[in-house]
Image (tube, rainbow, N blue to C red; front, top):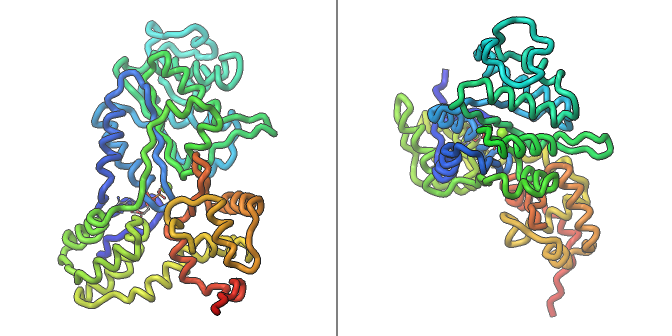
Length: 401
Ligand SMILES: Nc1ncnc2c1ncn2[C@@H]1O[C@H](COP(=O)(O)OP(=O)(O)O)[C@@H](O)[C@H]1O
Ligand SMILES: [Mg+2]
C-alpha cells in the first residue's frame, strides 16, 4: 500500500496544515470573550480550507473550556424555521445529554410541564419538551430552550455553535420561512442577556452578504475570517513537510516544488491534488521532474470541466472576456467587462452582463461581493479558461494599416 500522505478531498485533514496563523489568532481572541460581542464567519472559495480549519478550531475551543455544538448544513438547501430549530436542538442535545438537572435545581417556569421524572437529563426529549411547551413563534421557543440550557448547565460553561456550509441557509419570503433571520435574532437576543453562546458560521463568500441582507446588524455581530490561497512559503510548507515526515523522506527538485506552487496558485485543494499525483513519481525518483502538462490536464478534467459545462455558450464567451481582464484573479466590475467585450464581434451591454453574472452566480461560477464587485467563485477558473481553445472567430479582426 502506498504511504501517499496527500489528501485532496472535501474536509479531509491535510498531512500538514500550513499557514492560517492569523486566522487562528483571531479565533483565539474570540474565545476569550465572556460576554459575546463578536461571532465568527469563516469564509472563502471552495477548496481553500474552511472545513479543515473549522476542525482545528474545535480543539482550540475545548482547550479553553468551550463546549462545541454543530453540524454541516450542506443538505439543508432551504430549511424551514422548524427544521432549523430541530437542527439546533439535535446538535445541542449531543453535548447536553450528559447533564443531569436535579428537581430541586430546576429553573424556568413551564419547564415541569410534560416532564415526569424527578431528575432529568438535558437530552433531546427534554429540550424538545421545553421547546414544545413554549408558546409563540419558533424564535421565542428557541430562545427559551437556549436560556433553559444556559441556566441548567454548569455556570462557567460556554458554548460554540459551529455550522459549516452555512451559505445554504436562506430566508424565503414566498414561503414565509425565515430560518436565517431566526438564527441571527436568537443569538443576538441571548447574547444581549450575557448568555455565552457564540456562533461560528463557515461558508462560501456569498455567506456574509447574505447575513447582512437578512439583518443589517449582522455587520457588527461577526468578525470575518477570510481564507485566501496560501502564500509561497506556506505553500512550500504544505508540500515539503509531509514529504520530510514520510518514512523515507523525499526531496524533490527545487524546480518541481516551485512548479507545484505556481500551478496550484497556493490553493490548498490544488496543492493536495497535484502532490497526491506527484508523490507516486517522487517516491520512485525524486529527481524526476513531474509531468505538469498531464497533471494540469487531469485537474482540468477532474475539477474544472464539470463546472465549466454548467455554462451555456454565450455564458462561456462572457467568461472568456472576463479571463482576459488583468484583474480576473481578484475582483472586477460590470463596466470593465463591458469595455473589454468591445474587442468581440458581439459585445455585451451593461444590463446583459448584469443579468448573466447573476445567472452564473446561481450556477456557482461567479459571486458578487458586498461592495457590488464580482469574482470567479471557483479558484483559478481564469487560468483554466485561458487554457481552453479560444473562440477566435468571435473576436473582432485587428485592423492594421
Ligand atoms: N492550510 C492547509 N494546508 C494544506 N492543505 C490544506 C489546508 N487547508 C486545507 N487543505 C486541504 O485542502 C483541501 C480542501 O480543504 P477543505 O477544508 O475541504 O476546503 P473548503 O471547506 O474551504 O472547501 C483538503 O484536501 C485539505 O486537506
Ligand atoms: Mg468545506
